[in-house]
Length: 289
Image (cartoon, rainbow, N blue to C red; front, top):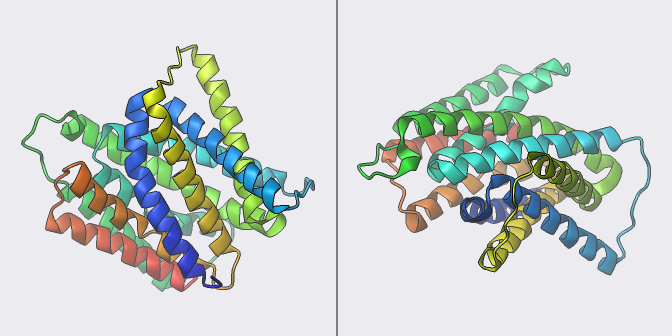
């Protein structure tokens, strides 16, 4: 398990299944409550594992701003992403969000990096794949509300916003992991997200309902999403950690396949081509730094 790509592949499998479960979780209790519960389950899971395994907790504060940045970005990105896959086609939202490493290229430029032409080309290819996926999403003959033109447009917009915030969060995560390690980083991000979302839910003064039948869905959602982050962050901390990102973006293939099988979403050959462009573009970006 010294291979960063192996950890990324595990992340892809976890996130691919988690995205499908997130749709049912969001429709069961609402996006905000589902995301808040996911953060709570994740924090409890990581805290229990750390306590049982004797993992040390680092109390230093010099990297706290990175943790707050990741937590804030994760909260914002998660709300937009889970809203997109709850109300729109999963096979559209997932590939669009998967382009987040490409969006990280202009962010790196703002931070002083000078990408090579290869990096810019891979970014263009990735975003071109997103465009193909968006344009090739089959029009449904059914009356399913998720295929209404307004919902499709909102799904694309929300997924792009989520991708941008995840890209910024990934930049901060790399620095936080160097200070706190993957376990504590995931734990703190989950705690920050839980506190922030709880405050939002309370401020909205909406009645929160958690029916018993939704508990297994919410528990599975929290477990798989957190496991994916832990696997990715562990891979990032290994030599050639960029390969973890390459493998993790394969989650969109898992998600689209599951959406086709279990949600009966139509996926055209051209849309599969767009998914391949996204995965390939991200692979080039990560493989060449």
